[in-house]
Image 1 (cartoon, rainbow, N blue to C red):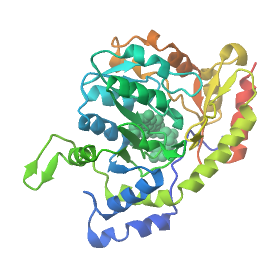
Image 2: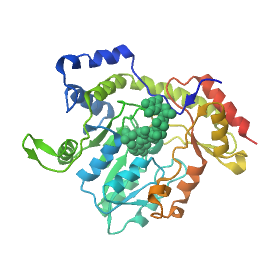
Image 3: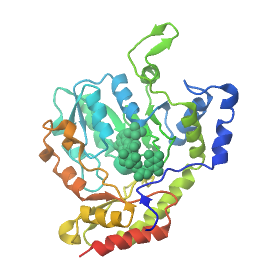
Length: 369
Ligand code: T4K
């Protein structure tokens, strides 16, 4: 059996570089609670992402939940079901009701032409997702938000390093939440961040992520522990030094996939977006069974038999999860339902050999009838 190929492989700096980065912690014994690595990483990220302000958190999920809390969101939040569990769970765990908007077929982000019809007098916010690193229809979303006085929280978990019209993707909306999980284009082992422009919002996030503590004898609000520790920040610092190289290598892999799979009847690929500098985060492929002759699950199985673990990101839709049984009507998001049944995300990471990409594509093509 050939070596297992997983959907992704965490990027890591040379071991010596990481050891060098964490060495001083054995002198300082400062391991967490906004230490020097946290501060340094924050400054580096602010510059790399070209954002006005940023705060670091334990993970992308806490970034979403604390942002909801800091913006004091109550009521309904318009969002997409074509995402990871985190987006929907964050809304629900904050006591709000997700209202699902369908997605568009080309880039799988929220169909902005369908947002307005979902707005009620209970709507408080919109939480769109830059899914796969694809940029949402920012202009329309912001226009609607202004018209109806709604907050916009972008789930930018997949969009690290993406730029839109030359601007860092984290500079849009009231806040943008990033994930630095091990499986992402950029990781700090576990980690996340929220980007924002409003200083008062930043102050609230700073309080919330540390139990709402304002000083040794003052607790201002009720918050969890969502602080990034120094080992994660050190990993982030190291990985950030290599991020451009990482993205360039991913580009190479993606271009090879595109070369092999574009123009195959019955296969639909992620469309290139105008004005977007992408990060090559995922490689989603849609299989149209009636034309390709095999469906997504057939291809998934064929790859699995060869020890290649592609993933069905994002199937099932979050509005069909068991934990939400009976809560939502999936027939209201037909495009998302169709895409979630057709999509397979193929293995993608910086060091994936092109010969493996060829092997993956050969197996896929053998499924065609
Ligand atoms: N919003 C969106 C839209 C998101 O996609 C996510 C997370 C979030 C919010 C929340 O952000 P975080 O709170 O997680 O920071 C993975 C990730 O755990 C999750 O971060 C990610 N989205 C989601 C799309 O994928 P799983 O359950 O599919 O991961 P897992 O463990 O199956 O790993 C996938 C592959 O990655 C493995 O087969 C091999 C590779 N891998 C994995 C780990 C854990 C590594 O190479 N190294 C590792 O350490 O959820």
